[in-house]
Length: 389
Image (cartoon, rainbow, N blue to C red; front, top):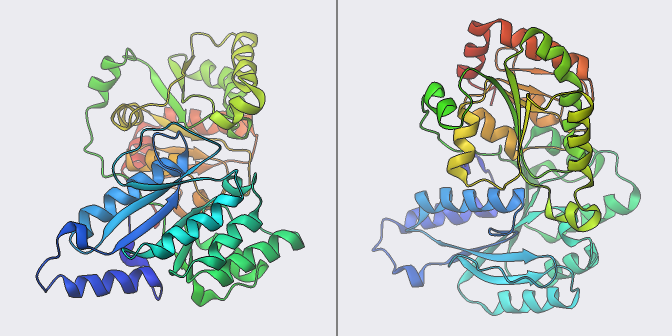
């Protein structure tokens, strides 16, 4: 993660203070000041949970002698997760009474110097944002809020809520310049309070595509893939609708749909979306060209699947999705990308690194895949070209 990109905020001040302290004798690890992450966390299956674990590992690798990183795990209802040792507290986000209690616990914990909140509106929906606001108001420790979603043109209620969150914290972090602009123009948040830190990703030691395809039984196939927790917003049906036109030109294509259905979606509607996709596969006679990998893959396996991918497809239907971890993973593995025009894609993709298509446009997707598949030098160059960040 590009921690050094943070400017004029509490986290940078804390890091600089601790870097100065590094010149002094090292403190025992049980005496180091703590930064507490308020976030979903593995084994909870959630994109922000994975992101947060990656971020903790990156920070710990660089600053483990300066401060200690701990987690308050966000849970939706009572959970029986067995967490790793860095998880110090947990919060049932559905119980509004627990927020003030947690604030008091943090205030009384002398080790904690800073609270870093990974914010997604869905986390706090059940108890209501007022409960989260009350938590921020009662904290006596400085807080930084990372907004994973920033909706443009908010209604008055949302605008006031975000303004209150901003007023109650020391700094706000977003992952795209577009999100920072929306916060400034649509919400009236002072620019000096907003820091842009692009979504980080893994440094991947690249393996042989030929060997990986052989390992996973995909030798001789041109591989399209997408991954992430499934829900109707993923737009996977757009790719299925594009496949007949792709197969006419590239009969050896296989499309991998990697990931299980989002637990929240399962709770609300079961496997309705996956069943619809499976029905569409049969309707379009795509059984030999689509493979569902209905698992939440370990990181090692996921990165191998991405490295054997010829083209990665990101087809979200949501124009307000600011950033995508799956998109960042694909870029780190050198995948040429075809994406719908979310702000993240517009900021990091250039003409030589990917293709941007309109939402739900199967014809554009098919044309993009066929163009890349027919031009191997272009595809290889796309995989090797740096992004614009």
